[in-house]
Length: 473
DNA sequence: TGAAATGTTGGGGCG
DNA sequence: ACGCCCCAACATTTC
Image 1 (cartoon, rainbow, N blue to C red):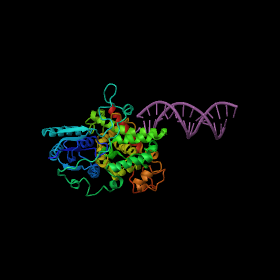
Image 2 (cartoon, rainbow, N blue to C red):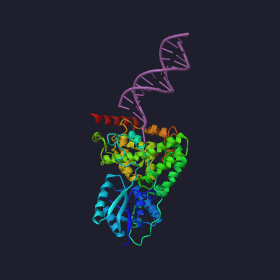
Image 3 (tube, rainbow, N blue to C red):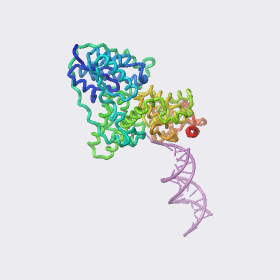
Image 4 (cartoon, chains in turn brown, yellow, green):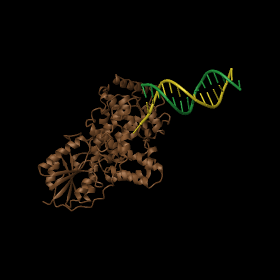
């Protein structure tokens, strides 16, 4: 058999700036690419519905990009280690190249894959990854991990990432055939019912979609980032989160594109805006660093004092939150944006999360699980770190008494009510003065087809503070 | 990457 | 002219 090289794809669905692919292409042999879908993984967590939808289209895009390099993308469903081992044998690869994925479950998986390959005398070569500074590389003076974001960020930003890798050249065509599953047969897309129309209208998964978003951001939005990022009615953010999660674009590509754009301007405002957006890349690294030091943080409070918190189990209240029927317009707008598009603006994520945890006293895990299923950018490290941050039990958490007032937040960050009008159309005719106010029980001037507030803010605030006080005793 | 309660200040109305 | 009160407006503290 003609020798070949295999690239095992996971969360790095791109061909540009891809260490493993570059190394594989440098071998001078034909290259195969492999993606393994393990529906019920023995390690880690099954993907949610929105990320499965994204994955389908991302794999489709990757297949197209790889074919231009004469590389076939092989799809296999089954136990990961076995599938990687089998495929390496089928294509005749002595070395399998892969990118690092910095999650505890993936690390366990890699050990299994290595063992399986070693059995056949093959090796696994891990390079690169999906972060700028992986867990363990940003350490304080005592050599330990940072617990607080700001000092982590100050140290993090002193390092400049190396330049993105050059564009790979096409490889030799292979004479070997290797069987692949049919992507459609994986049924990653929803059918009965097809709830993905809003996702199709909003996103273009794949590296091309990512590149277009990045270019649009740099050409238009970057110079306004610090002012616009908090206003959910505007496209003030990059909207790259899902593309980054799946590795369709590398954080290194983003870092350099943003810094290059700032370097072309003399304006200090652009300089500050560029660091402000790069800071968001730092959050990804920080969250993954946290996950590496708290491998069970997806399910356990980092601050164990919160293990005694009197969470309420209220399935009906949870359902109203999920459906966007809480009666608080900014909360409902966010939850509906999430359900329709698979994404929610960051400012609104904080508001809806605070509402679930503090106004309804429902465990952050219930919210995290809903996000996991509905977000196209659902990511273990980012999702759980941010939920714990809001709930107050995280490493560098918001103090529990910091309770968002959903009315004030709406008035402050959606002053013209545009965001609410878009996602809660039954309120569209209300004035700017009234649009963020929940419907009081006795008011006749409000629309009747919009639910009244599930809980009065002042009452809920006191109740949350009392619950928090009970922890300290 | 808050909000509410409480404290302080200073201008203007008024006797 | 002066003191008193009211109450924004802003600052500080507390949750």
